[in-house]
Length: 191
Image 1 (cartoon, rainbow, N blue to C red):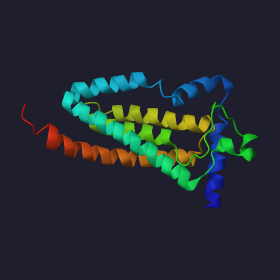
Image 2: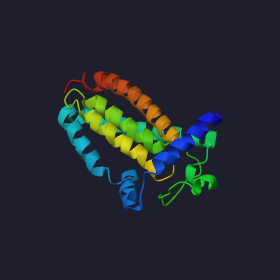
Image 3: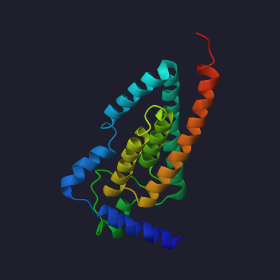
């Protein structure tokens, strides 16, 4: 286990060192909540266009529930494992770059990575019939969000990879739930 932690720390220092002050603002925007609103509006438009209003309402309910699940699971893990974030460790403060204005206490696993990956996989699966390359664009966006957490110094790569994995698994489960609910309650109802 100690070797895995050391590897994670070394990989963090490598990926984190690629930063420079001139790029800090960009990565702070990527990790922020509000910059992605145009993406969310665009995805909502595509959902309405291809799935219709009833199915889109179901999707919105499931997305809200899915994001809540990823966030709460991340909190459970953070306080269960109590692994300090890189920005909390004196030994790393001298060797890393820390551009985030705030640094939480614990970081295993990244809720940003889990939530962005969950959204990317879920929406990508829902719309793959009509937009087969959309999932790759959304996955690229999720990877940017995940890397931003390493760049800013608030997560190790392992935190991000576990977040990506759990986010994708949760999204798959919610996609299966959507298919069942949509076929049972939405598509089978008579107007």
